[in-house]
Image 1 (spheres, rainbow, N blue to C red):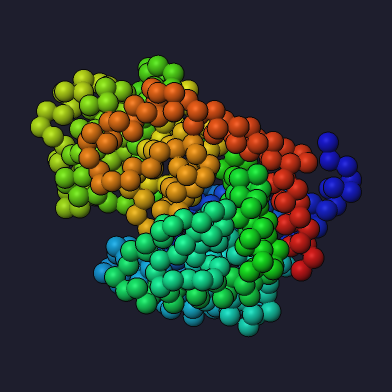
Image 2 (cartoon, one colour; image 1 turned 30 degrees about the vertical axis):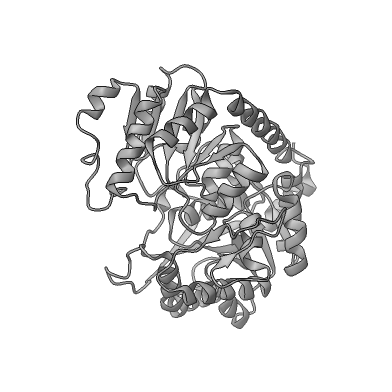
Length: 449
């Protein structure tokens, strides 16, 4: 029960407003809105979300927040997310004036009575540090990636567009090849993020200390600013939806009919695409494993197609109900389901963290860009609760990987390792746990501004 002292602190915080600015991509919007909910419900701050017109979040899902839309100036061609680095750089140019005007209006009492304590932006919005400085407003950065990845790209030496992992161990070969049409662009982009993150008032991580303690120790040498590991964000509340795509709930009713730990769940996130040959190899690999599968095939996953046209002929009849294909799934609920035995993932950080939280071993296939390649290496080679599909997508490799993780002793060992980590994660969120204490530290830090 709250005592009066707690109540007065809560009232005091309610008068402090936080302004949050997510980057408009699914893997960035999710953690920012989850963070907003934590800071509102658990820490007691008022929340204003500034967002671009492009991929604007559904404000009706968050009635307690104030939303401000700014024009992003993107043409239809520019709104293509094919080259994510070029897209992000462009947004950092086009949003400067609209964002500055919107923030200045908020600080000038434009409709919200509360005192604005600080600005929290995605790390990719590097232009916002100069805006915050000009308005004398502290800026805290949300890094929606793993600390391991940020260490890889942010701490020297950077070798052109290859970055060696030098956090928990050293690989003989570079693990990360950033794929972009303009290699110089990636270097500039990362240098801007690094410089403006170092200039910020602190970093919030969607991670927990027991998972990335060594990586954090190394990073603090380069970034001697406050770090707050308050994750996993999604575990603070029941599965919340900030999804830009409609979730197919038949996933759950289909899973209800499957044996425990038998299903391979396949999803490559909201951006990755495959070609027609790769798609067919995935289909045959799933079919030949003779195990039940739930497969998320996003419209447009195969370039130039609407949805399932590239499937092998009579594929659905052949698998005879053993597979279930949906356009998008309620992923947190799926991973929490007792029938799911493994997760074939692109290893985006949100997906990796969600899999750890539910104790589901992983198959790392189709990591394409950004943090995905580093996360995949950590899952398979450091934390060792997943397999890395090293070669190109080939049905025999896929079939063997699925059987190894779900049916064989190797997979059972992975499950044991990930369950140990899941137990540590459960503790970190409880009173006195590492994330619980970190959230208290973050709250007190914001109140000190």
